[in-house]
Image (cartoon, rainbow, N blue to C red; front, side):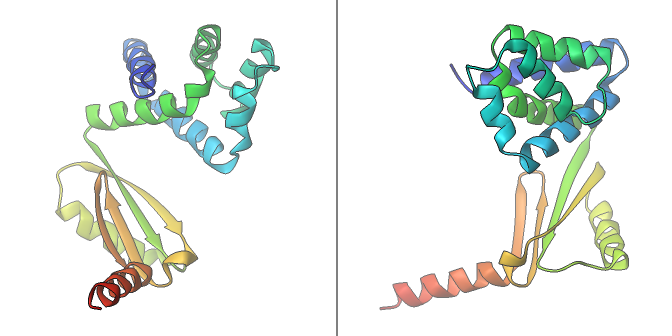
Length: 180
């Protein structure tokens, strides 16, 4: 089976249901929370893929990944996913739903990664510059990653500007290797 097709179909169905019941935005927030839980706890994927775990336990694990008690519409969706044995696609479904929601609502996701914490004034200034570059609503994600050494990496949807020291060092290394 195509791992992109299955999550996409479930995400589209969930989005259609959410729009019909005017809960698309709350489900979007829940899907962001679910994806964050998968990112923070890699063992969550392993637990859902464990054949020894009963469907009831898998539903409990997946429901608890949403954080606080999820709404009934989301619990029914979790039960459907588990009933159809698609629980291993839960993270991919969450990501696909977010993508569908952003596309439908003209939202661009801006991810800023720096080596150290930035002052809020600097982040606001970057946000102001980014808003002048697009007509979309911007959703900002800020990360600190010391491995980039210095500089920043700015990603807007699928485009990326890598102005990190780590990236420059890699380019310099390749240049030196190729000059021999």
